[in-house]
Length: 219
Image 1 (cartoon, rainbow, N blue to C red):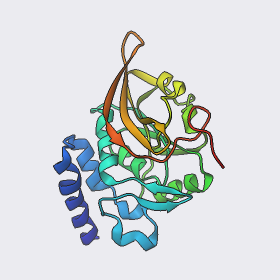
Image 2 (cartoon, one colour; image 1 turned 45 degrees about the vertical axis):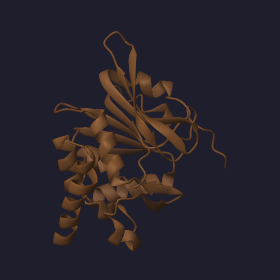
Image 3 (cartoon, rainbow, N blue to C red; image 1 turned 90 degrees about the vertical axis):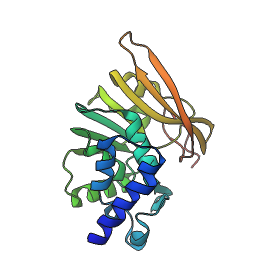
C-alpha cells in the first residue's frame, strides 16, 4: 500500500501536474483513487505507467493524464451536484469524478464492462456512482440536467442528446473527429441564452463512440 501511494504521488507530480493540470480538486482526486484497483491483476505492476492499459472487450483504461485533463476541462468547481460520464470502462474515471462531484452517473454499452465497473467501484468503497448499461450517446434523460458531461470515446459529431442534458453553465467534454480513431477534444458550454460555446482543446485518440448518435457498430 505504501508503495502504491508513493507511485500515485509520483504519477500526479510528474505525469499530470508537470503537464499543466493545476485544478487542486482534480490533483487530489487522482492521488486518492487507487488506479491499481481498476486494472487487471496481471497488469498491476503497470498501474501507474504513463499509458492506457487493456481491460478486456477491446477497451482500455485511459492514460492517467487524459483522465485528469478531461476532469479539469469540466471545471466543476465546488458545487457540482451531478456529472454524467459516457464510457464507464472499468470505472476508474468515474471513481476520480466521484471525489469532485456529489453524484456521478456513468453509462457503459458493454454489459461485461458495466459489471466490472460496478465490482471495482464497490471494492474501492465508492458509493456515489451509478453504473448504467446502455447507449451513452443518448445520455441519461431521467437524471438530467448535468453540471458536466464527459465522453471517453470519439464520435463523428457532438450528440444532440448530450447537449440538451447540460445545465445552463454546464460543460460537455468530448473527442470529435471524422476519423474513428483520431479526434479533437472539444469543450462545449451551455450559455444562459440557450446557446453553446465550443472550444478546441487539442488532438487526442480515443476508441470510437458507438451508438444511435455516434458511429455505427461495425460488428
